Length: 182
Image (cartoon, rainbow, N blue to C red; front, side, top):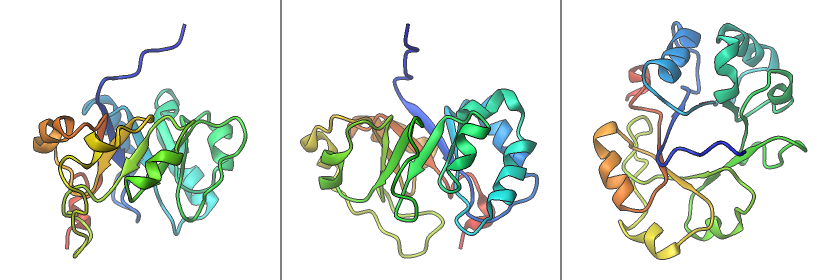
């Protein structure tokens, strides 16, 4: 029997750079904060650096991690999957996948994904000048076949608004890592 997916996904993205006590903070997001997944997004890290971070996270939590880079590590560590992006647009065979989208039109070609992120929904917290690009009803009009997760300027107090706009979840980045704020 297939596990039931949560009705509203809570996803965390790591800071793109190293932060203090990161493995412990990732574990806390999954255990105490109730996030469904943590995306490890370290575009400038080597495979060895990424593996070191994964190994510092309790093995029991690794099945809730997704990689944005170094996809070969996903199967080695039994991770939740990979997140396709402009740097890494092709998933290895047999690995669950998610993807970044930056327009409603992109959603049409996303069959076979666990979910996709759509951004920026609100003005970014961590990227100066990265402004919201979507009308509040854009997703409701599009009626995508794949679950869509809001990304960009997301804070917990916006979860209700995000649900009303038809999203299946929320992804947080800048809110979780105060060291990234401009």
